[in-house]
Amino acid sequence: MKFRKTGIGILLVLLATAAVGAEEKVLTIDDAVKYALENNISLQESKVTFDALKRTKDFSWNSISPTLTGTAGYTRPNEKTTYEYEGYIEGTISLSLTPALYSTMRAALLNYENGKITYDEAVRSVELSVRTAFYDLLYEKVYIVLQQRNLDTAKKQYEQNVVKYKSGQVSELDMLTSQVTYEKLKPTLESALVSYNNSLASFKQVLGIDQNTDISLSGTLDDVLALKDISLAENSSSVPAILAAEKEVEIAKNSLLAERFSAYAPSVSAEWIYGKIKTDLSDTLSTAGSVTLAVSIPLDGYLPWSTGAQSVASGKDSVKKAELSLADEKTTAAVNIASYLNQIKQAQSQLQALQTNIDLAQKTYDMTLAAYNHGSKDLLSLQDAADSLLEAKVDLESEKYTLISAVLNVESTLGVPFGTLGK
Image (cartoon, rainbow, N blue to C red; front, side, top):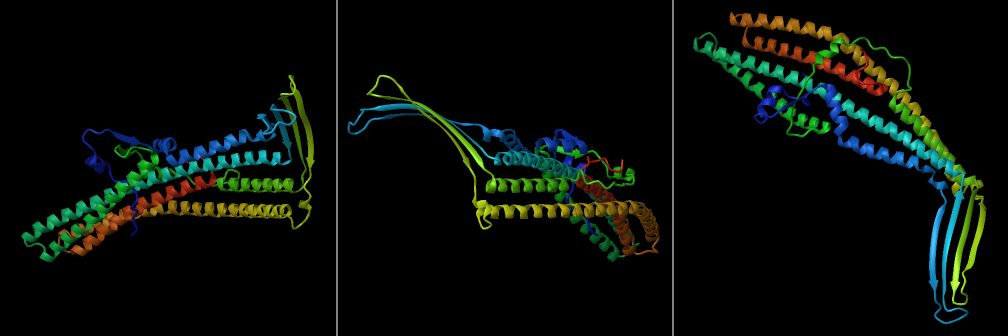
């Protein structure tokens, strides 16, 4: 029987390990998400990256801004010629216009839009992790409670057998066997509690909560029992993975356009220079300056073996790869969604059966306990019945968690707000 060991411990453990008088913070799932979105370090780093992309987009037009240069100088020849000294001051304004300006500005916009998709997905990823961990912690809380009850039952059975052994009602073997059973259950509970401490620390870190702050979770796995049937329309417009892949196609096409501009398109440059010169030969300032207009047309791009032509060919390959990746993402999203929906339907159908199993296991245990007390059942039969009851209870809680996880994964894959499907 497989048990998850990555969740939270029970509230009693929190209170037992907390400092006396410490205030406890009670978190709902919405509280946990809010803390994470406000304080998560990796999300803050993603925001810095996104803000940088926005800044680049906002000023991507700066390529058309003219270049301004101011120069001043003084010259004194080592040997006197026509003048003893010369001083000058000069200003230059230059401007270069190329078709690549469009692709550069377009690239900045596309990178910003892609960065927004990436940042939004980072936000959703953190929220998915928090929500999944929150319900996993609730599952672990129930698991530990069940293990504690099982341990208490085993202890009670052992103590009863000690009394019965002293009165000659059970053999020494039965008494020792019940003691072994009781002692064997202790490491299981202790392991779960250690795992809880580690998981709780990780949970606090994700939420940005101080490790010394005591927290407890307000929620229940039973919320999933009210889940309605989920039916999805064929619509991939909001699927984050597909949106990102579509944006990559746009980026690849723009990069190809930039390569074509570089290989084939002309560029225009203009420069105006204006300056004043003063020498010892004259008391007045003389004026110097020039205006330059130039057009540059690349020709090697028309040669198939040139660097420009090869760059264009590589750009075409990148577009093809991006389009193939987009098609693959659409297929992957459809497969994942179908898989999660199958998990949801399977879990929903099994919940009632698992509840029935608990009822039967409880009845079997009660009857076996009564028979054992009357001497018609041995201790092994009683232990088997107790194990079956515990397993049935854990299986039900595990299936609830599986159902919740599948719903969260569908919402994450579709890009819809969490907590909206099946409502």
